[in-house]
Image (cartoon, rainbow, N blue to C red; front, side, top):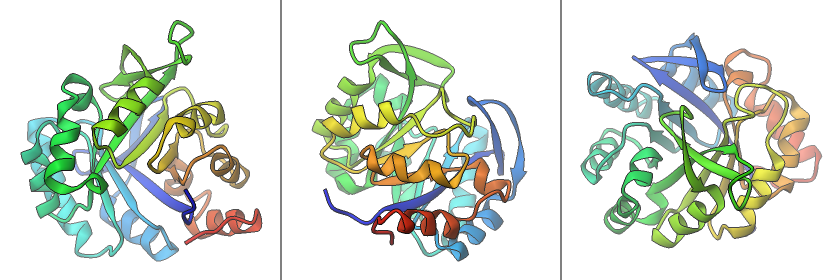
Length: 253
């Protein structure tokens, strides 16, 4: 699958603010999501991903307003995930300006949701979010988790990725819970394992901490790289990451 590499900043949002932690724990305030999204857009981001990390009913309206306000100022694709439980949730987010929708826990509970989204809106809209952790008992050595990495399932991550694609997922967002926020690099073994069974684009997430971390994720099979804290903290810019990828001979948008 020959496509240009994408660089995607991720904004974990709770109650209208961007938050960041390590291994999905100890969340701290990282700024205003609309301001950050606009900054990343100006730096050359290919997409923006919003994840509603505390997707409660009272938080839902805040997220709809946030998506609309961002779409009015940022003219690149917006992916929104967190708390999406039904096709109607997808329809409303798209109506507010989202381009793609990430599903995780709800798809694990009811896998038919993936096909329902793909059938109604097209496979390109449906992004399967996989929050993955290592588990020696799993056939592949990896299992998926739910609820922002807090609850481990017995579902093998590679088998689940394969099933989701068959059901209509158009993209896989693969986040390593073990690497998340550590800034020690992407889990290349995980990316390779997913990419080997995937016929759709794979987004690598979790662990980016330095410029030299991004190219190996693409070499391992990812089509896009996603990061959060290195951008939020001003340690790296999107344009720096793109320059580093180009320096490694990669086709970057």
